[in-house]
Length: 613
Image (cartoon, rainbow, N blue to C red; front, side):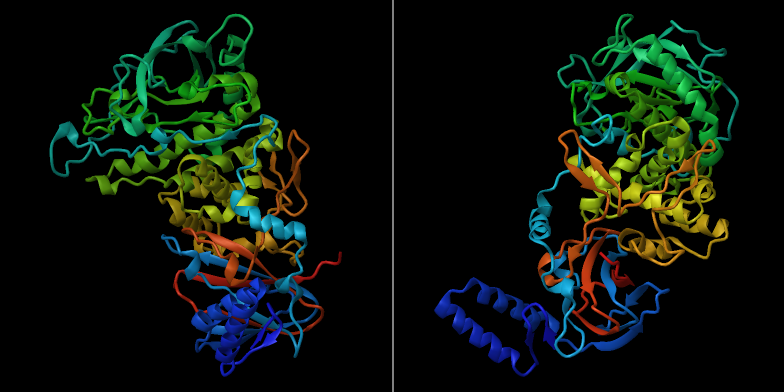
């Protein structure tokens, strides 16, 4: 075989001699280069001499992607012109594939002595330094007009909807049928501005008398909120601690801001429901499902986590917590049972400080949290009505639920008149350099959660722009399935001959091919959004953003080298995008791969005509 890393022609007979000679030379010279050569040859010796098949694939300019069978060691790629060649390594399993167990390209050749330039060392010094520093990259911040990155509220995210056994009885007693008895806490007529209500909210750990019984060591207590605005479809409650009648500042908002919030939510309420379905107007009790007499959505405004500071880089901008769909009369079943903290109704929460400073970002958050509320009703509450045990309850995984909420924001961005980078599009900057850190079905914790948000949004944006737009999203949102199966069934429902597996397989095409044939998947497509506006076309290969310091960031996903030394873990339903190289002309390219380890790793070669510089 021909190892293009070092320009040596090697065979099984002389590898041993070569290695021994170089080891001796390394002893004599202490040459680091020779040491590197020995290390690479030892890798080849230990993992790359295996009995695999040789197959051929002729690239004709239309079929741009080839799946490498597990048993193939060498692929002969016949190209019709000068082309760029990429590799995607994809994990189609639910567990991590360690970096050391992933496949890589051992060698490439074209003709007797040629090699593919990009695979040797044609990267610029700047690119090489970038790759060396890639593990030190943080999330891109300071890019958005608002300047902060939104994070999730862990207690709400981690809430597991409990199964209610009728009247607390044991066994598999079903919930009673829906009854029309109004909740004791629900008013019989619309409320008016100025009324007050005590609501459960999170408070600082030092708050005296606060409850510390519940999830994630957070503390909660009741605080008085005043109804500051009434919309057609919502109530805007502002905690008295975060309201001012004077000039808004810090985490204090005015009634005018509350009215604007109500107006903005009213403008999107029916339009979101047309696509994502309707939220539930029932409350879950041990006696059944009780209909709420006042069906307005309650939006509570306060300083979430009491952490607002000027120039804050990341924030919980809002959250929906399904505990509020339960009656608050239940005794906790364990230390993590938050039902006693229910505010009993249709509630979600937004941050007062960021509403004051960055209203557009919070308006987008309204759409995000409303989708969460709808999703709980469409998926979880519907499944509860026939459930006989906890495992019968169907709930969307965090990744798919968050994906749909960000797609909702994406779809309504034009209608609301929100700047592009105050929509989830800004997450594509984090995705571009960190996509491999979180698989699609992951949901990471703490600061790493931003990688999961970025990955979930990117896949949702890809789905919507390539496989049916609003029609597809409506089917995913309203069918009886969740997660991957919801996507598969939605594709079938709109007549697409696709499944989750097939669209996931094609995903790399949209991420690396900037010169693909017409019809190939791409982010650079505009489709119908919500309210008559269009979801914008996103050209990842030309889009850039600039932060306050003048630094330029690209939306183009980072391509990793395809050799053994630059491998990373493959997260669940995660992938890496690798640059193999380019050919100087038409001809046959031989690409030799290391042996397979995991059956969940799929290798794809992607080819496109080389772009002229």
